[in-house]
Length: 387
Image 1 (cartoon, rainbow, N blue to C red):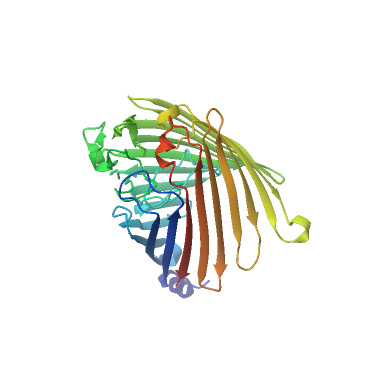
Image 2 (cartoon, rainbow, N blue to C red):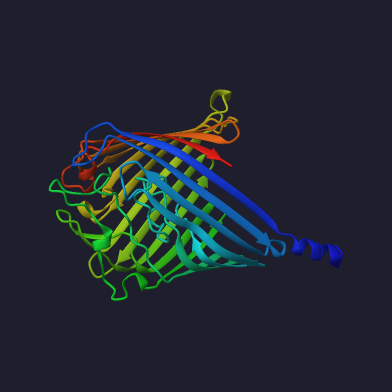
């Protein structure tokens, strides 16, 4: 390539703008436990995204915003900067500065090692949605794996649904959990820096990651379930996530050990996903999932997964509409609690998609944290327009 062509390539600027508009309706099958709660919640969201690339792809800028309006829950009506960062890639080195979202994990039912971003608890029940986190992120790609270093100078509190919201902790005397009232173990409070490291690599059919986190824990420590007295502790957490591929079977595991002044935590999720491809020449793939979930915090675990079994079925129709369906349940080994869910999505035409989500809480044991959600089984329909 001549120097002039190389210069033209380096000077070329690539831009892309996208926009997602969603309207959804969530219907609860039972009346709420707490005063003011409704049975039907209409909401709408907008998510604009802008991407800019220059210097021959060496430098880039990405911005993703998010806003949701909710009919009844004033805390679910919220705005967030999901991503807003500059990135430079030079050879095997990558540096990012700004607000980002980073995902770690392998298992289906829970992501124990995924600790970089705070959970957007008003956006989704399953913890899959995350808030943007300001960070300096350094990555080095080598023959023995990828080394990631994260420096996060500021902590974001988890926001819980408001007084008229559903899927929220609370008490029958009107107490509403409010993270603004939570205290911090560190005197620096939100400004206590957090550091994280991760080494990820693959050896043959084994893909794994080892991580370490030191900073303010993203999950509040609940000291008293009756008053929801809680704080954000300074923690150290070591994590392992791994996936072994043997033919049609994926063997998965996530494990963490977390330490702070108030409690030491050992948690584990391990299981298998086995896929039957192109069943009877229909083009449909059927995946069977099974995982065991353990958390030694017992009753005060916010997830309620102290000793549980998850089973599920994933259907991928591999059609032009990209139709997918996931059905599953989580069953407490020691108690009566059962949680069921359905997730389905399908493209509609060239610029729309539809989604259905349902959650069912059955026979929830009164000693568990999830007992406050026992009346909150729901069905949700969503329609998204892409620009």
